[in-house]
Length: 344
Image (cartoon, rainbow, N blue to C red):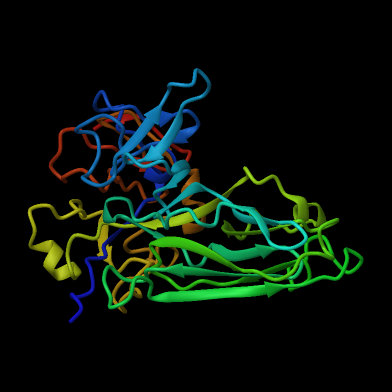
């Protein structure tokens, strides 16, 4: 018998200013950046600066720009979005290269790659595509879609790509000729790629290898030159993150560890693993009574005022950081560019 659906909580901010500008460093000794990656609560680098499960490791060891990693994993993160509850990470391409008679070399025998670091992350279904590159190539993805199940993998998908030569391969088109793509469902936590071996004797001159990966669909555009891609290449993909430590929002509200600690944040089902309930709406759909801005599409233009200063919107209303208690002495107030900076 399967366990009840895991806790899936998301924090939707009534003002998304925190997504663009709020930092922990203004009220503590917490670092707010690792290289070019903005790190904001619930994420953090130093102990005591993050919610359990949301640690970021900042690696400064190579002497170049610091790199951010999810927890203690080897998954490099290049962007963290509080507004959308997503993190952009890098993952190595899986590949298989051939000679005239067989597979010559491959990295597809690597262990399954888990992205569910600390039970926080799932692979985003709305921003990524399963992608295969090659001629006379077939590959598939195996993945866990839930935390348990009777089989090692509970989800499979794949596609077939074929081309006799490069004359019909079209740059920017991934339609099964040199490149194929398919969507993935929500809730996947890991990736294990496999290839079906076909003869490549007649394709070696222009397609000596097959490549498979999950990739940010807005980033990747197929090119005929990808038929001879560097086997060390990594691709970006998006992960959905959420607080997943209660079965329902009602259960979470009774916990001392409830994530939505301010009346300026709400609890709802996360993107991955469950649908939003009727009573919870995505940020863009929250009514003006909850997000009193003239134009909610411009929330990213909000700016941060100094601690104990306030900014006024067109209706002179003040708002603070959703993660702080309402009676906190360190409240942050946000509005759009007409920040007055007057003392509270």
